[in-house]
Length: 427
Image (cartoon, rainbow, N blue to C red):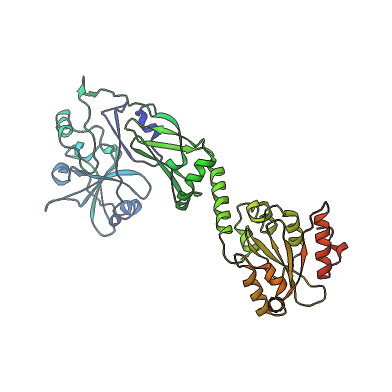
């Protein structure tokens, strides 16, 4: 590694590079565009097995091969340059160059390995030991002054000095940077985040990112005004790599929570709490107990202890339904083998628990539809006996405003449904 220029030390793994120079230390590094290995050549093993006897030298390389080969990697992952042979009298169809020198720089005559591809194309393989030095300096100088191959966009070498050596040119080291950006300066995409800095784009890959998070950037700026700390490196051409943004896990957890709450409180119809709990950002270890939702104040307000008791004694053979931020309907198992009870509870303080016991599915569905209205008229329900019968309404239990409110409320609720209070105190 001490023989390569500093750009090579920061080039991403797997990149194919061309080191230019007559000998170490190499003066210039160029990343080359890699084309696919030609499928018609088959595998390297197939080429080895199809070796042609008696052909050991190519004597007309410069006349037969295009001077602009293209770079690829064979099926073993070894980089090489591939040239096509043209002309009616060309001895080969392809030249595969493993010598390390470019085809344009190789001698006109050299030892080779001749073989055939699976489709019978004749292939000339230039092995690493075939070439110990490129063509004479006069030819090499001419090749350097010719136009670089457009496919590779190679830069010209610096002028040669003394004894044919290339004057070493030290590349500038990449500069580390740390900046602080507002969240609105970041662009959220599916599985990556991007930003612009001095005309160049930096990216951070993360499976947590989603394009829909674009809409919450203003909220993040309000809640986290310190912004995002971005670390990375800038090359001498201004390009950015090695970017990291600190604290992304916590930020995405906050975004996920807000999205979950926003979608929940905007619901217009009853949601099943088990399904809702399975999507909760507070869920951990595969837990889907709807009691995890009680830790979301936007869903339940201040009456968490009351809801805990209802959840603990719910009939698990029925679905508990919820309108986050408004209320819920908890099925309670009957003690007399009759139809289940349903406790309709609102999140707001100062209201009562309304008990329903529909006698059939049609009555129950009407009860669900009436209670999910944006503002169901409780006073109307208490006065209209026909509406009570239509919905299976039984009675209401007030939230008492005294020091023992929870105990009194729970005792009266259990008494109304025939649940022994002593059996329910452990909730």
